[in-house]
Image (cartoon, rainbow, N blue to C red; front, side, top):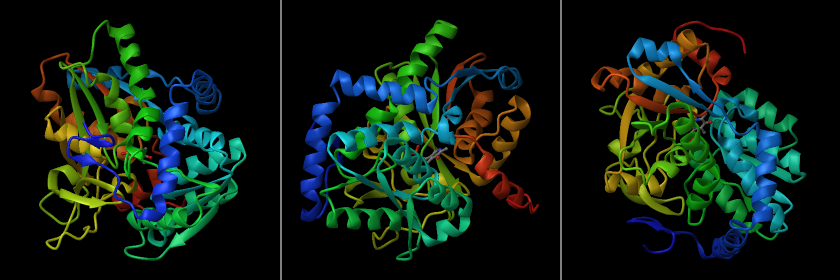
Amino acid sequence: MQIGYFGNHGGRFVPETIMNAINELESAYNTYKDDPSFQSELCALLDECANRPSKLYHAKRMSADLGVQVYLKREDLNHTGSHKINNVLGQILLAKKMGKTRIIAETGAGQHGVASATGAALLGLECEIFMGEEDAKRQALNVYRMRLLGAKVHLVSSGTATLKDAVSEALREWSGRMHDTHYLIGSAVGPHPFPTIVRDLQSVISLESRAQILESTGRLPDMVVACVGGGSNAIGSFHHFIGDSSVRLIGCEAAGRGVNTPENAATITTGRMGIFHGMKSYFCQDEQGQIAPVYSISAGLDYPGVGPEHAYLHDIKRAEFVPITDDEAVDAFEYLSKIEGIIPAIESAHAIAYVKKTAKTLPKDSLILVTLSGRGDKDCAAMARYKGEDIYE
Ligand SMILES: *Cc1c(COP(=O)(O)O)cnc(C)c1O
């Protein structure tokens, strides 16, 4: 396979101005990724600051209710409340090794922005976050958090003033200031080598979960399920299972108000091949091939593209991608809260919803490993609103 490609997807479609920074990043990553002292520093950070390894949890009441055995990989228990910190700590450590003193990052819901601001505070780097103006209005608490953690937040008003515009703005900023700045991309997307770097850093999820489930049950799961925005928690959850052909890999995309309406973000289900944000992959597009406005109740899944490795796993039929609607996700949000005492992020609730909906069709006691990518405290006010109740944040 061509370097930087996953089948027909991936590559590096960037303006000349960014090439230097990308080349520098690629060669630094190639140097450090197999460097034992870099890896042991990263391990120590993940352990001391992010609370790794994360638990594998047998959801006993849910299992009894559904007739299948459900195990949850608890990324919700990480510091800052999601899997995002795994990628952030790795990239910030790499940036420091490269002599960078400043990181920039995009954020949609604010989860990656908060994780980045946290990592920068921890390791003593300057941090500036780009966030769509619309998103900032919806996520005022996270804007406050980022500022509290010492980051400068830039509101982006171009385009639809959401995540895709924040990514574009961060790429623009990077091209103007590469000498001291690393662009800390938050998902397994963008030009090569970002999808590979983010995949490697998130693969700690399946490195741990594969060993944990073998230890707990003595066998491999029948199915690994994760939600897909850009695809970082999903690719991290799949990575060490890709070679296990008996394990089905399921990515849950946001179907919003339905895949037959324009209001969804189910990229693999409804999108077409295109080039955007430096990569060739599937994207939600209008008839002219312009990036379509997307929608999901879950701000973390509200992205019009998908990481190139997922597009490839779909093409070769190694992974299956399924749409989950807002209604199904909200129902699963309430279900997991009541049955296990765990309030999931609304993103992660998409994965729970899939299990809940398909359990009946599976052989009894099928072993299902679900990545709980984050915790749901951030979503409570929005969920209450969805149900017609107004609470103060
Ligand atoms: C950001 C986020 C996602 C979506 O991003 P991926 O890169 O697809 O993992 C999913 N869950 C949570 C909790 C998030 O914060």
